[in-house]
Image (cartoon, rainbow, N blue to C red; front, side, top):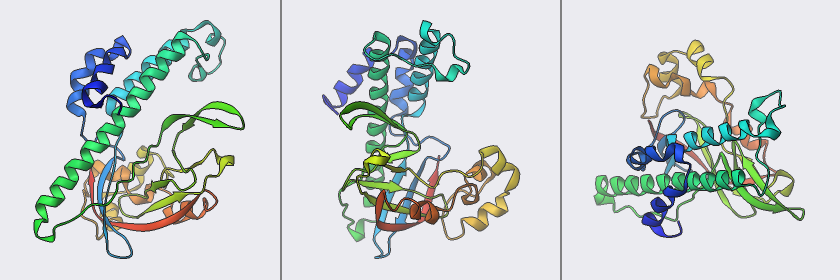
Amino acid sequence: ATGGWDGFWGRFDGVADSVKFRQERAVKQMGTLGSGNHYIELLLDGAGAVWLTLHSGSRNIGKELAEFHIGVAQKLPHNQGLIDRDLAVFVADTPQMAAYRNDLFWAQEYAKYNRTIMMALLKDVVGKEFKKAKPTFEQEISCHHNYVAEERYEGMDLLVTRKGAIRAGSGEYGIIPGSMGTSSYIVKGLGNEKAFNSASHGAGRRMSRSAAKRRFTTKDLEEQTRGVECRKDSGVVDEIPGAYKPIEQVIDQQRDLVEVVAKLKQFVCVKG
């Protein structure tokens, strides 16, 4: 990040006043996993190489910033006639839009720092625990999803929102995970501009968390995560593989967006 760690936190003074009192908590949460579908995994590829992967984001500070700006947008005059209040928007080149962009990109940078720190901590643990093996680490793949990017298509400058999606520009590496008991994939983008250089961010849920809790039991979870060292208690039943779409089918349906570089299978999965 430009300006380094000190420069990053110095820019917190510029975010919305409504969340400035959260700075202490945001500092403490930096480098932490969070809950839900966030995870840390150790996986093997077909050649027997071990991969370290993790998934986390901007923690609660990003959510609070988003809620603040949604509230601002809903109060603007041009949004008063909306049937659905969730469709409230900002107009380009206005102070409200500028403030939103500032906080949005700050939160995305927070998420990037968060993952960077966690990966460094994970590699440190692996290095210490397997000292005799003298593990070495190759270049990392950093992959955003649920984010906004400023990109240009067909001569127009656009804000591309990748909700449930990753960037898959030509030659760009990405990660498409399955679930806590299924395969994950390392992919390389094909640069399909019809899809705005995007691809799936993962298998995606086929049922809600509440529906998964009603349908599945801890016994089902144990069966579906057999061979994986992970939590198998009622607190993560909503993350059971059966609640997600088949990852192989998801990958097959986006062959025009990415090419598969490696298929990975986890043997350790840590849920927050």
